[in-house]
Length: 70
Image 1 (cartoon, rainbow, N blue to C red):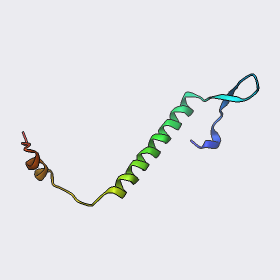
Image 2: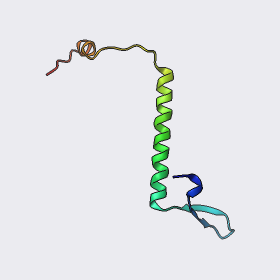
Image 3: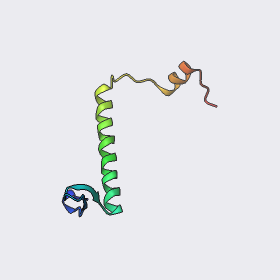
Image 4: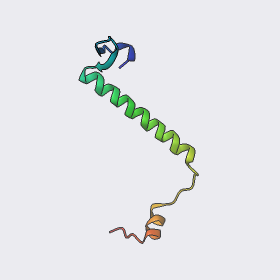
């Protein structure tokens, strides 16, 4: 969905000031999906910056935590 394709309707107060917006459910859900994707990208970028590059194998992790495979 492109922003310019939105067809919002506005609720105005007695002074004519916009106080709320009305969107279709489809438009609302598409906006939420886009925001979730942006949040995922932000979190990925943040994690990538903080990544030290250090890795540990699953078997070493299990040994460290005394976890058996069963």
